Image (cartoon, rainbow, N blue to C red):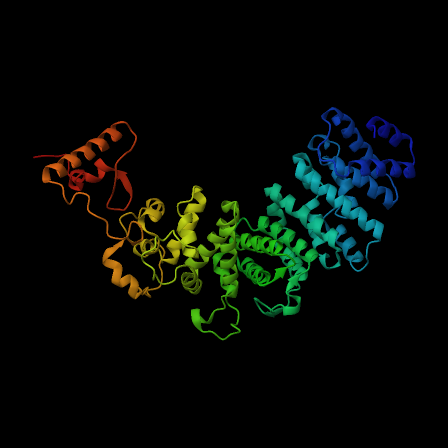
Length: 542
């Protein structure tokens, strides 16, 4: 359709004709995401005209059609100037029933709490929420305008009536809250401190996931017949988790926060024990749960294991490790995923398991048994094989620094930050990066204090310990000695030749020989060979 023609007709037509005109435009452009730059000015004018129509008293069916047009236009960042104003955002917020976050709006909501929106009115609300999501995402000016019209308090007021939501109203309300909290750090703080959005989102999750409490921080086990989360409930839960992740990025201290975080941890444990209608959606749900668990204080993670052990097993202090096993399985899936982004997909769960192991002895002992079981096959290199240990050791030399460090740190913590134990399971070559970063090349332990229980070596390891190669992390087959049949003169010649090669490479700055200081850190070789007494000798002489 010709945009000039549409603009002329919009000025002269009545509501019915406007609706028909825009319906045709919407049908033709419903799948349009790339627009003609030459018509940018005309589309901007169309935005303004549609807003003008919405500002008048028109029937819900016409409002819905206008909002659909605005949603299509809002895909183009360059034409949002008319919408990204206080007046434009106020019109959309009013249509979405989010206008005003004060007591007046709260009373209005509470009076409507038990009345269902008419079908057409609900469609208007959904379309307005979709428009707001697009506009807020695409326009910094709209983000500022959303603060001016108090969109965040309006969203929190809407959260209080979450149990009355139909699916799409809830989905796009939560998505808008996620976008606003992601894009505006100042709004994030207001949502958390003044409007208690974390508590409200916790209530949304409780309702959406059908949480039934049987203890202060214990959720009733899901019924095996209803173990699957319905698709629509799962969608809303994901949006709530994403918004809650943004709001918990900054740490808060206080008894109230500690209680709230423990409730969240209990709900996330419940989510980890459930599945959705597809394996991919289940993995996505667990991914969001992992991200949020990383934001909670590590002291609250005991909620994950402080659940009665139904099988009555007394291992690991009687703690229930079902949720931890789900996290281990999730970690393995992410490691095995071909072509995946390890930094985004794997490092969050590794970080979570690392901190949980560092703080909670039972979790560390369980993970040690799963990931680093007693060493039996000492003839195979630690990075070769299909076990979880083999996969993690391979990641210790990954090209991505974050992946490499996180994998190494996880294994180091499972070894109670003992260099000797780590080398036994990984080999010096694989662990060198971590040891350099920690200043532990000379051996020793990390700073964290662990329990005194000793790790017992297997008979296989004990019998091969004297020939175990700590550099490669395995027992190598005996190799012929290349200098065995050389004369002393030949050995001296080869040694001098090697020294000259090192000297040449050093002078050309190809390599730089390094040594280890007494404190375990690296330094240029000449510094480490210097007599420490020279540094301590005084300059005064008799």
